[in-house]
Image (cartoon, rainbow, N blue to C red; front, side, top):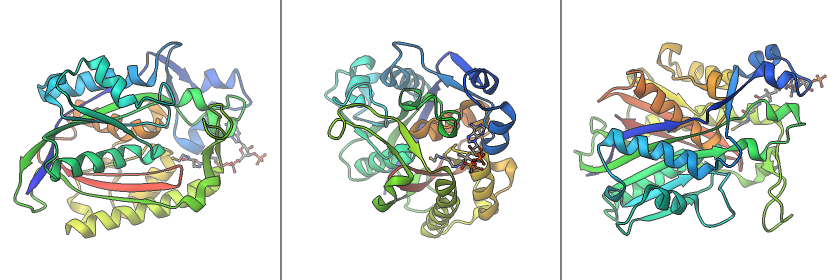
Length: 324
Ligand code: COA
C-alpha cells in the first residue's frame, strides 16, 4: 500500500512580536483576561509588505531542507490559507514561483479556515495514494492580522500570523497501523453553522476583504464536542487506542479547548504539543507550526504516533493520524 511519509517539516514566524500588554495599550483589554480565557501571551504579526506567500515560502524552504530535497523534487504543492495575497491566483502557485520550481509540478489552495491544514494533508495524501504524485509540499500559512477588526476586542486578541510546512514522500507500507506515514484522515463540515465564524466580506459579496466575525461562546461549545468526536473516529478507523498516541497536536485556538479535548481523550498534558501561548491562533498554520516546533525540540521522533485535529469556520473540522 502506498503511504505518504513525512520527509521534513519547517516553520516561519514574522519577526514582530506583539504581547498582550502591547494590545492593552490600544484596546480595552488586559494581559490577565487574554491569558485566562485563551492561554495566549503573545502573537507574531507580519510586517508591512510581508505576505502570506512570503511566510509560506520561508516555511517551505525549511521543510525542503529538512527533507534533503530541492524545489524540483516536489510534484504537488497544496497551500491551506484563508488569507491569500490576492483573490487569485492560488497562493500555491505564488509559492511555486518564489521557490523556483521548474519541474512542471502543480499547485492549488485549499480553503477550510482553521481546519485547512488537515484538509490539505488529506488532499495531498489522496493524490499520493492514488499514484498521481510521488511527493507533496503541504503548507498552512496565514496573515490573519489583515482580516481582524482591531477594534473588536472579542476577536483581535486571539489570532496571529505564521506558516508551517510539511514534505510528504510516497513509500510502500504493509497497510497496517505500524506503517510510517499518514494512516488516516477524517473530514467534516456543516455549512448551516456559517454565522458562528465568518468574514463579513469577499470578492462576490461586498467587493472588500472584510473582517473576521465570531460568536465566541458557541464556537467554543462546538469545538470541544466536534474535535473530540473526530479524534475518536480516527482512533476507531485505525484500531489504535488513545494511550498509543505519542503526541497529540491539536489546532491551537484556545488553551482551554486544547485541555478539554485532551481530557476527554484521556491524553496527559505531557503528551500534548502546545504553542498557543507564543503563537496565538494562526488558523491553518497552527498545526504544521506546532508539528515543526515538536520536531525541532526532539519531542516528535521517528516512529512516533501523532494525532492532529482542528475545527474552523464553515464550520469545518477534521483529524488525522500520522506515524512519524
Ligand atoms: N478583554 C477584556 N474583556 C473582554 C475581551 C477582551 N479581549 N473580549 C471580551 N471581553 C468581555 C466581554 O465583553 C464580556 O464582558 P461582559 O460580561 O461585560 O459583557 C466578557 O469579557 C465575557 O465575554 P465572553 O465572550 O462571554 O467570554 P468567554 O468566556 O466566552 O471567552 C473567548 C471569550 C472568545 C475567549 C471564548 O469564547 C473562546 O475562546 N471561544 C472560542 C474561540 C475560538 O477558538 N475561535 C477560533 C476557532 S478556530
